[in-house]
Image 1: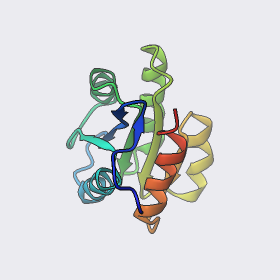
Image 2: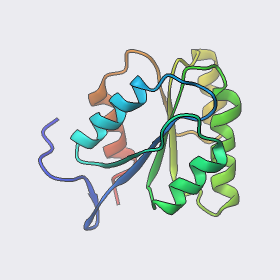
Image 3: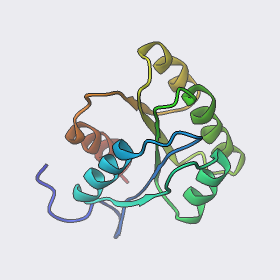
Amino acid sequence: MGQTGPVTSGSVPTRILIAKPGLDGHDRGAKVIARALRDAGFEVIYSGLHQTPEQIVATAIDEDVAAVGLSSLSGAHLTLFPRVVELLRQKDAADIIVFGGGVIPEADVGTLKEAGLAAIFGPGTSLGEIAEWVRVNVATP
């Protein structure tokens, strides 16, 4: 990826929250994404399993993140992902970019984007592609 220092917005590394909403107990992919973004120079916070949308939004605001990456393998993405976006808007934090990934049917991608998600990354998306998307769409001041 060629990045040697932190990806910054000003003088502070860009902070990204990776979160697992709902009852999905599979977090290997989320941890892999968190590590890849960290290795690409971002400051990454991982929220852990079984987070409610309310907990995710509170953490995003408390940690002053620029973006939230949501991961779902449970099939609840159409409910949980838009709820995070909605709560961020309600908390006057709509400037926090939300992206998602996991096992998301292609037919649901448009619905999620209409709900305010900036991007959806499905199985097989390279770590480099995700890091570059974050660099271009989140880290740019």
